[in-house]
Image 1 (cartoon, rainbow, N blue to C red):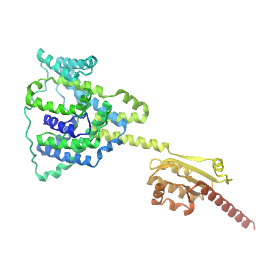
Image 2 (image 1 turned 60 degrees about the vertical axis):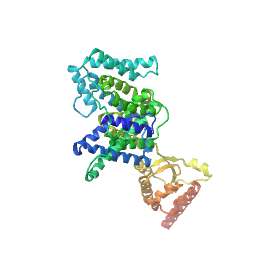
Image 3 (image 1 turned 90 degrees about the vertical axis):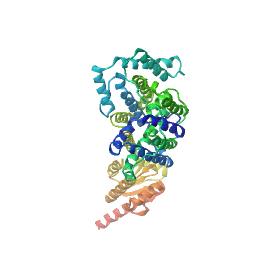
Image 4 (image 1 turned 45 degrees about the vertical axis):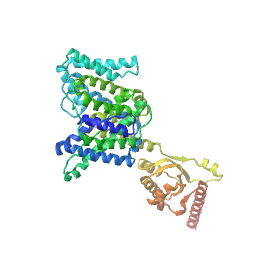
Length: 505
């Protein structure tokens, strides 16, 4: 099933996808999603789920959902890349040490148990083959960069293993023919129950493919991929693969990384990759079956190591502590959990830290009266204070604004200047209304100057303007607000003088 997926899905994805270097096929993450489906509904359900997922992914491309990946922060992408590289490396540990793969789903735990098993049952011949492959992959590019180092290393390791008669793990038997296309057979009554599984497969296929293409962009430095076209290609690949007995496919990060490191720059490399696999199946399946698993493990280990761009990781970690934290969380979550959970954690952490930064960058600035006097040419009475609100007044900063602005005392008029306010949400508008209400309740008149039209609409919607003492306490210019404040103070003092005179008589 997996080989057919690489043949068919890889070919279709290479032609119609949006990345020049992406290689599609089955992945470990997809297997985790599919195993429960097979256990509950049978193997045929996998093909139906693949077709349904393909339709959903194509629909996502038509709706241009792929462009939403642009909102994934760079530290999340780098953390994901580091995590995936570590997983690819750890997945090869059992094969590289010549021990059976221990039971378990967590890659790190399985690798650790494999190391412990190797202390007693490790195979030196297998480790020697891995060392040979690694040495060739390091030396050959230094001799000439155009040499296909991975192919040469695998070929040499296979010849050495055969010549020495090494008893080590091999790829083994692979199918010698391709199946004819057929429609899967599943009762119509089960289609609705398979929809949730199809949605999960579609989300995983889309997310893993887009992230793989994004990582490949960073590795090549060439033309960027088209995310919506990539979804379209992956959707078609998942429509084609089940018809030939293949499982759902995604952009495979390990294969894509090997493709890039081998020097691929166009989609022709992925097309040739699929055609070569077809040729192997039809012409030379027996010979390929003799390739040592240790040779492939060595190639993937070196590829995983080279996937991590040290200068990118260093740049992110040196930028800010928040960026370093997001990268670390994403990498650890990728290793400890899975792709989707890692991206969710990374994006959530990045969003929280970004909101925290925005909230801290917003400020209530007390403008000195003397500066305002110079601007207006007017002598202001004592008892007027002007505040300028900069940045964003939203749910993350509302409480701090409430605390700062309601602490004002010994004044009669507060002018809030709002033109420099960049963002206002319902919570911020409600907080502004509370500030007005509390100050007015303490006989402090509040005047608002110059909210933007879009902010004015929000203030009206939440009723913040209704809490002003008078509807004319909203001004478009600062001189108008200052003139009104001055006249208000004069009236207030006249009233106080009249009250004192009346009391004296």
